[in-house]
Length: 215
Ligand SMILES: CC(C)(COP(=O)(O)OP(=O)(O)OC[C@H]1O[C@@H](n2cnc3c(N)ncnc32)[C@H](O)[C@@H]1OP(=O)(O)O)[C@@H](O)C(=O)NCCC(=O)NCCS
Image (cartoon, rainbow, N blue to C red; front, side):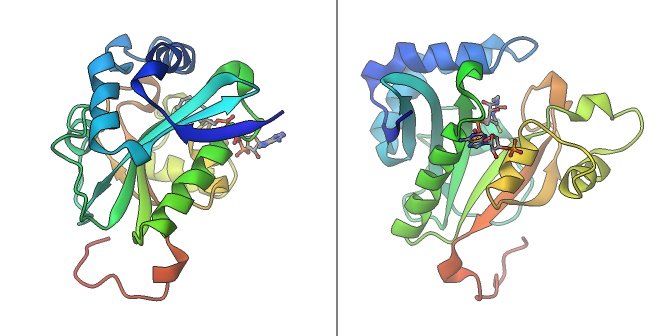
């Protein structure tokens, strides 16, 4: 199996939508699947952050990122992504790459495709001299435990290895670490609308203090 990560273009829209349909089935709201205008805005605003993973000629996964200046403040997906358009939230002079989407077709999972997209994201952080990669990570397994614990405890127990979460366990394996739980991040029934902000630090900045940042 060969996996190639390349920038996506407007011509990839139908394939990107097919991946979203499969990767975010109900109860995930259909209204959050990429619209043609949003893909066009990513391609126009920050094409380098728009990535597609092609596996043996088939579009199997995608990821979208933008650059922000990170101040450690709680935020929602709509705020950080400019409602999915990134036009007004992308800051070319910012310090952090922020991932607003990652998905892989169920038929192509556990083959390292998301891992390849993450490698490409980390390379982009290093190549661009950014301090870190950030993402609001879904916790789709949380609803199974929410009657017994809050989201902070759920995250701690996924980190300790007691629970496995489809998305957070993957992020931890990529070397990302949780910073804080974000309430009302995104309409997401399985995660009870919560997400956990996760970070991967550029090794070139690892020894430097965070300064005034509240992270
Ligand atoms: C989270 C998601 C993107 C992971 O995609 P994926 O392509 O299956 O991820 P990978 O294959 O790189 O890694 C998944 C697992 O397969 C394992 N794996 C990686 N390469 C492998 C290989 N060649 N052979 C066998 N297993 C492999 C990894 O160790 C990893 O294990 P883990 O779950 O314990 O971390 C995918 O489940 C998804 O699309 N979920 C729904 C959408 C979503 O919620 N996205 C996140 C938004 S925040």
